[in-house]
Length: 639
Image (tube, rainbow, N blue to C red):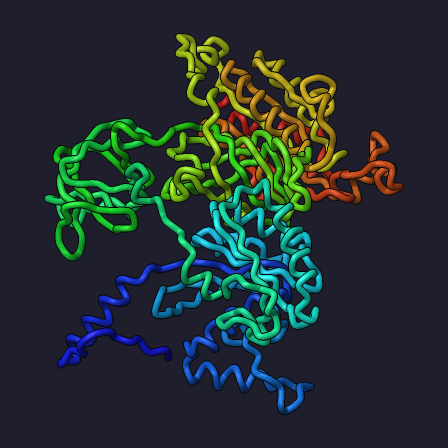
């Protein structure tokens, strides 16, 4: 390992020497940076070269890498594969690619570093974004043979979106282009022209050969025409100043600390700013004011807590606060809104569908959110804004989102900690997107619920019934509309007030502007679910007859209503039977390729997992099935 040189008189005791060394370590600044770029641009080899030439590799690591470098098919005198000093997963070593984010700590006499080696393969873009989210600086690698390519541009966009303002462009593998100055200048100019709109404060191009070591730590003997810094020299001197201490105070509450009946504290890590006992803070989103009593840590109380400190604070008076609330100075409070505009990076193979409900996690705040509008997608090749209805894997877009509960936030450009969020698939719990909040939508705070005297119970009481939704779902031709129509006839015969929302009929009016792709299907169900909720509020028994192929949207419809008001009825008819019936000739056209996105043929139908009723139509008549639905309503005391 590299040794530290102590200037001045050598302390006599070992404890004194240790104290001096610890003091030196604490005095050196820490730079968190990532390496990114396209696959095979040499990111892992570059970091391996930094560690190897700095003598910062443990002997056992070096021996392991030397052994693994002698792979079958390689000559016995094969050189050390430096990427093996970083790539730790067996799959990474076998495939010669980085899959997961690898973090390495190293230091020089001038600075301490934590480097994140992020994957370049397009499949693992989500891992690259994860690594970049914790960094202050980026080294973007470009293969000198290939120049700036799509993945290079995508990573540059993500780095910019995540708030990294200074980057180095390491133009690697210069040895494979004969250390050509003209090639270096052309790539540097190409990237500078592309990145001009991204808002970087500085872009430093450096020609390197990670394999040979040129301009990594020591100046190259092959590129006398280059007079700039080496990569390590630049990393040691680049100024990256965190403004977290200058930002307004923010403390997201992560845990209510109640070890006994005499103590109640609110634990969390200070996201920005500072706080002292006696300061008056506001608890958002509830808006209550409180005075800080103590700042408690395991090492005793603090007089002041700064950004990054993990603390437990107490109030001088009893105030109700909970996990997800954010403490802030009363005169510099964060925004609160249930509708926001945000930039989103999509991580999932399933596309983002406006209208679909996702889980959202913003700090300690957890609720649900719907993408109401995709304003545009970002073309990473030229940074143009492109119209679109969905976001596909690794695409970047600007969206409006509506949340079930108001979020407390700052714009991401002002505070990374309180301005970022993730979206989560509610069925698989997969993280499907990362988002950066731009601003709250004004209409979110200007619109209030109007109090009304006559409510749902009063309207239903006039009709002597309990309102509910009977949601008929199944394939086209399953018999949904037939059964729903018979149910409505029976309810009308006994004097019940009803309405039937039929899929085909609604598309003649309310949803006439929608097609049959996945995004339009989601919006189709969202509108119908909202309409059904209004009819329930009017005191009606509502029958909804829609294919509604996705579980997520049926769950969304259920959650719009009170417990027990949503009755899912699965009209369970096999695809083969539906095709035999084919009352509208649609299956025949779909099989012939005349209709695309047809459920059951080239678009999936997700069967209900736990419906309230499952109707088997093959051996039971529609009249008998309608009677069973009415009987279920009686059993549940709706009629």
